[in-house]
Image (cartoon, rainbow, N blue to C red):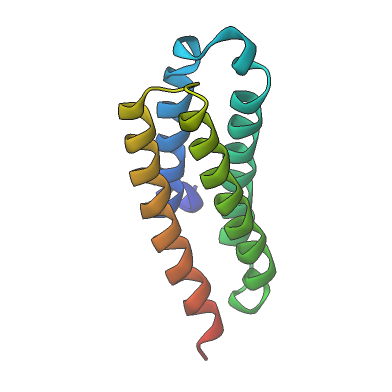
Length: 116
């Protein structure tokens, strides 16, 4: 499938895999609250990317904007996890780098849908 070849999908897929790999290091009380919320948000971002990849250029903008909102929400949740010590600092730094990169890619994609 062509949509699986787009770089932003690959980066978000990797983000989920990294996030999933730290599940067992999170405190048990956090695994089913903030951690689960982050995990679901990443999955929603993946869904948005895949949905937008199948639409015509002029139809992508609303989906991409909603996906960008989800990414910003994920930033807040990941920062909250760091501040509550639900994840280690090194895991936080890795996650933030990946989220920032995905954000730049998503911003470029949104910008490209506005150009005619």
